[in-house]
Every structure is written in structure tokens, then in C-alpha cells.
Length: 143
Picture 1 (cartoon, one colour):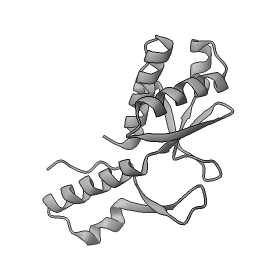
Picture 2: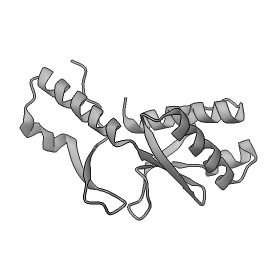
Picture 3: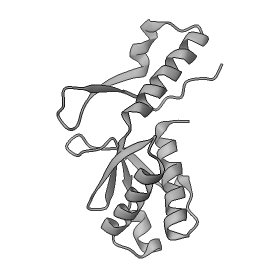
Picture 4: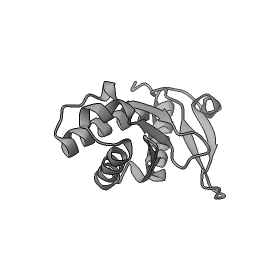
């Protein structure tokens, strides 16, 4: 499962749990956060405003709090900017995903020269000296 799909699924569950309405992961729009904003992935809230009868800022705050509190292995922080819920993915999630992917690549007979096809280097949005590896939206085969 891709990280974007996982963000969609946990966001749909958050909507169901917080607002007690049926939500589908397919109805949640998730994009990579623009570099000028803090965060890794953005949930677009405008489509939910009418159904849930709340302002985008209120929706973002409630969903963001739920996601960070109930998905600590996935998210470390959130912020809301005019109807966009920006989520910061836990660095440990990326580390675990990298370890798993490298193990799967080795099991499938791929070698380290293939890594450049799988990885994109991403500098930190906060301007710190550290960097993380962010995967493209490809899923590593299980065999």
C-alpha cells in the first residue's frame, strides 16, 4: 500500500470516528505538501465542508488532532492553512519503510544500483541539516 493510500484510509477513519458519518478513502484528496509549507502530505478539506457543516479550519483542527493522537507511528504534527490539513510524517515511518523496501528488493534479486529508481532525496521543510528519503508512490512487489 502506498503512503498516500494509507493517509487516505486513516483520514477516512478519523472522519468516521470524530463526526460519526460514513467516509470512504476514495473520497479523500491527498497531495504532497508544497515546499513553502510545513508538512509532508496535505489533506484537502473543502469537499468535506458542506457534508460536515463546519468551517475548513475547524475540520482540519479536529481531524489533525485525531490523526496525530491516534496514529503516532505515522504522524508527528499537523497544521491547518485555509482548508488544507498539512501532516508531518514520522521519520521512523520512513526509516521502517526504507528497511522493509531494501529487504524486499534484496529478496527479489535487485541490487543497490536500483536504489536511484526508488528514492528521492528531500531536504527538511524546517531548514534543519537533516534529510530524509521520500519514496515515490510505487509499491514494492511482495515476491
